[in-house]
Length: 147
Image 1 (spheres, rainbow, N blue to C red):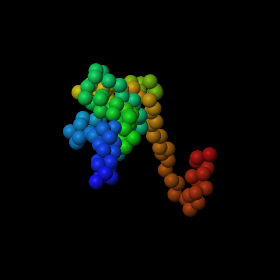
Image 2 (cartoon, helix red, strand yellow):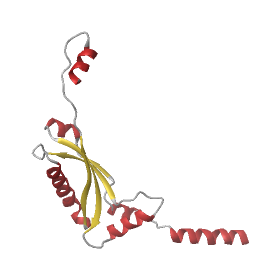
Image 3 (cartoon, one colour):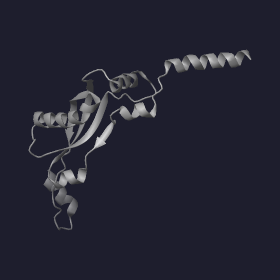
Image 4 (cartoon, rainbow, N blue to C red):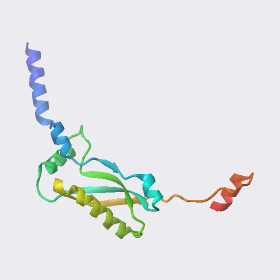
């Protein structure tokens, strides 16, 4: 009987330190990852970029409180940093232009959650395009083109 009470007491204390997030609360959090369509982006000759963002509150909200809980809870991913793969139109070539574009795009989506963001890191894919020559010695031809 004494051991049972001790176990119940210890579980109660442990649960008091853990934050339980309900499904409804979880739905308020922005997704950790989102991706634009890669194929459509490349067909339009746009840049496809991976971007990491750090979230900031526009005002105190339930969503921001949940993000703060996620930072402290060791059984959850921190939701303060989100990652996106974004298709950036070819008009935006410089780093600062691309940064401004992605921040504007993501901030517009986050506005209803009373959150804003700044881009921490932008990495755009650059895939070399070359046609294979119709020779029997393809590997040497490719090596010569890349050198």
